Length: 376
Image (cartoon, rainbow, N blue to C red; front, side, top):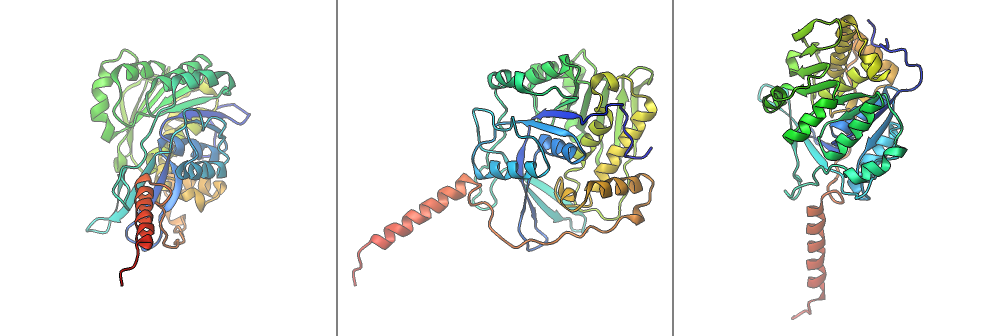
């Protein structure tokens, strides 16, 4: 099946609503002497932005403020036509900042690590803060009905949104990406149609999953370079046992950091356009084709730096063509990504409060020294 195929008969532009980690990604390539790249990121931010790139109406629900990081996130998301109507809910707070360091292993293989501390001053960068339940409840009448609701952090506000969307027939996609409150996690699972998580998270999630009565219709565990495995409770699938799909192999491999987000977006793009009702009618063949498409998207993004780096250099029709080549094993057709360098520049002044405080203190000291009388 070609990646352009749609598994639903939904003819209008589909809508996705999401809440969770929406952050500023600072991507630093330590193997080159060029400047960091600043992109809107975070799991929820990436998934909703990718879907907007693929033609969806995307509505993130967040608490972005007037700080520099929030402004950069809003500007980047707006570039991809993400709707920001509910991205600035009260009480507003500074956008989380995540620093991604790209380097290489001793054998020359790409390697990355994430940091929540400032490389310049060592101070903690702004953390994630969930939206508030009372604010979300007040905004519910104004939030458009969508085909998909996505969330990656459990909170009372996220569950309020999920319950409203679930009752409206929306497909609920949950991707837990950090430690979860057991009670809230059980409530989230009771509303979830598609549960997706990484192998790295499975050890912490498995005890929670075994203690719940609710089983999602589709459960997906990504295995990195080993592909993914899934099991389905959908009618007629007969696949309650785990089934495995291998990953695609590529020659140009630069950064796997966004692979999971592209995989999630691919699954939603193919299975979510008709909401929960259409999803329940998905055949096993369609599910296999969807997961193949999602894995091809995940492989494609690894050719670029950053979770969504390829979007800035590739038109959508070109992406779909290249994904089709990956699915058919025609990787020799793929052009080598040409990523221009950037000028070296300091980016943390104005983003990190620690740097701002140090700059302020330094300026105060300099002004005091200038005022000291000369004793020549």
